[in-house]
Image (tube, rainbow, N blue to C red; front, side, top):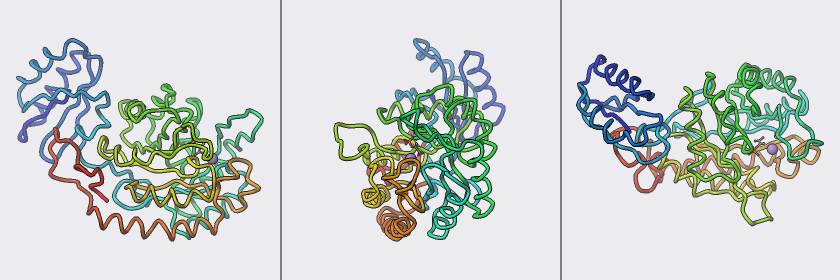
Length: 364
Ligand code: PEP
Ligand code: MN
C-alpha cells in the first residue's frame, strides 16, 4: 500500500508515519512526488491490510492510503510516476536521449578492447561494454579474462571517457566488479539469483538487469524489486530475447515488452538485439525496431574481427557494421521522439495510471 501525504505535510508528520510503519514490522520507502510525499509500505502485510489502512489513514499529515494490487511496488509507475534517469559520468540513461552500449562480448586482450572502444566512441556509443566474467553454456568454452579484463576496462574508460558496463556473475565478485565498472550487469541466467540481486542492491553503482530467457515481465520486475528494495534505485532493464519454439534465431526479441514496461515501471529499458537474434545480419533491423518502439537505448556486441571472437562470434558486428547501425538508429530515434513528444515528467498524480498514458510511449 502507499501512504499519500497531504501537500502541506511537514517532516515530523512524514517521520511519524514512517516510524509507525516500522513499528508494524514493515519497511517504509518514501518518494517525493511533484507536490506530495508518497510512502510505500513494503513487507509481509497479509490479512492485516484493512486494519493497517485504517490505522495509517488517521495519522497526522496523511491524505489517503492506497491499496496496491500489483506485486511490484517500488519499481511501479504508481509509486514513482516520473521516469528514472540514471547518470554515469557524462552519460544519462532514461532522459529521452539514445543510449548505445557497445563493445565486445568478451574482453580478449587489451588491444582488442582498445581498438573497439575507440571505434565505438567515435561512432557515437555512450557506454562501453565488455565481458570479463563470462557465463558460458559449456564449462569448456572461454570463461573470460576475469580481473585482468576489469583492469583493461578501467583503462579504456580513462582513454575514451565512456562509462563501462560488465557482468557480475556471483555475490563474491560484486565488490571487485563495482571497484572497476560504472554499471554492473546481471545476465539472463542470473535474473532470479536472489542473493546476487540483494548484493548488487547494496552497492553504489547502477545495475542493468537482463530479462531471464524464460521470465515473464512480472517476474522480471519482481527481480528488479529485489535490487531496489535492497537500497539501490538505479536499475536499468534490458530485453535480450526470450526462448520460444523458434530455432532460426537464438531467442525471440519481445519488442512488446518495451512499451509495456514503460507503462508499468519508471525504470529505463534497453534492447539487446545481439543476444536476441544470435545473427549479425539481424542485429541492425532489430536495433531499429527497438528504438522505434521506444527503448531508451540498445546494447550491441562489436568486435574488430568477429569471426575470430572467442565467444558469440556469429552475432558480433564488425566496426563498419556498427557505424552503419548508428547511422540507421540515430535518425529513427529523432523521428520517434518527434512523433511522441518530450518527456512526461510532470502533472501525474501518485495514484495515476502511468506517466506515459495510453500509448505507453509518452517520452519519445
Ligand atoms: C552478455 O551481455 O554478455 C550476456 C552474456 O548476455 P545474456 O546474459 O543476455 O545472455
Ligand atoms: Mn555475448
